[in-house]
Image (cartoon, rainbow, N blue to C red; front, top):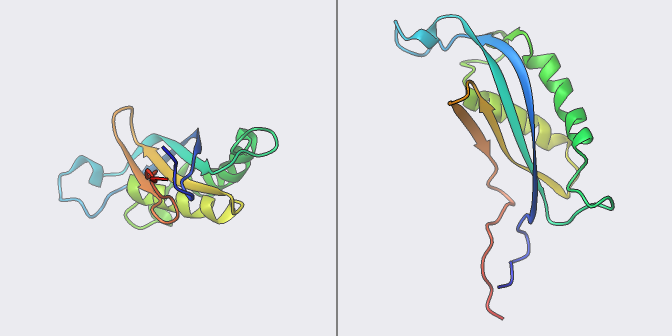
Length: 140
């Protein structure tokens, strides 16, 4: 099997935590998530590259931390998310983090997924489509 060019062969993930409150005001009256409440969120980012760097990595985990932590500290941690993000669902949080991270990445690294956990059992993700091609067998 030959893998077609353009498929991200290597992936890494790193997880971050923050605490925040929100209200999902678009939910029906009486829904518990319509009320003010909070979560200890977990955020997992997945990065991919076609090739490893000189150190044998997609990117150093320390660098990933430098890209993500300032965003989390300035916009998410110990904040009321409704103050700046309309209807701050886990899906929308994942999209905001994805867009911010992707804008900082060098051209050879791509963010393929950001997953936001509201609890141990509930998560939502934002997944990249453009530029990440699943492997195809090429007959040669």
